[in-house]
Image 1 (cartoon, rainbow, N blue to C red):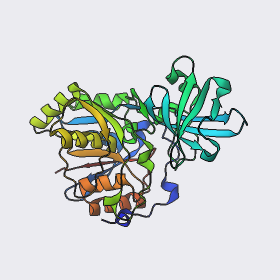
Image 2 (cartoon, helix red, strand yellow):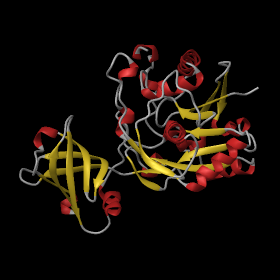
Image 3 (cartoon, rainbow, N blue to C red):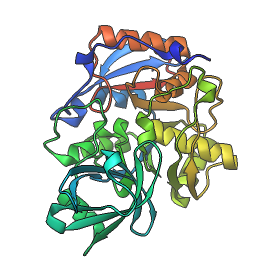
Length: 344
């Protein structure tokens, strides 16, 4: 299957640069995955598509303020460091700019010495393994010094760090937000519960591989970066019960979707588990965990568009995306949402 098949025309002005003041004020495109029928809604209308007994699966990962600006200890040259993955203790895999200035043994100073880093290993593509040196609690140091690692297509500064966190974000570790969850407020989640809909949590720490362009021509040759996931016994039991009752499991975001499908693929049922997943979902994939998906609008030719196409069919999805462009929907992380399910 060719990557070009997942391309579409996207005017730059449709890329949302800032979040809406009210999280629930975004629009919602409802797509019937069987018929391809489209309805233009507003996000709170999601309640009309949920039924008693359904289960929403949310990703409770919390984004680290992982972009740090510092300088080389010896020359004072400006250096940008993006923390990607905690390896062992205070050792991290990072992306560094400009990478050519950072060799093994180089020291970097952040915030007048509140945080220091020493390069312990050079990796490929601008990657560096570094060891952090600080006093106190690292998360507090990062909250003080770090910036949110917004995706490369967002050029505006974020006034409020919490707008790039979901209201249910709990487990720190992501390099990016699970953006489908950004549309929910506590009040809307309460209305979901009042309707008799279950809410379950999983964790998947989103890596920057999410934004990595597909650089091969045939999608079967693309390799995904591995991301850490976790499912509790409580969530597993609830999902097993929902499935047994014949109700729907609705993944909120592609990260929740990939967690559910990874666990079903590896264990054949939902269970308490954790690990690393590099699952790549594209048309031809057989879904065994989820029945419906709530997601944002994704980049052309991205693995996320391929995942959505696997669920609803490429023709239906490409048609829905053309409709979204024509109707001036807002795209990507701070944009509008899409609900993919069957309805009668």
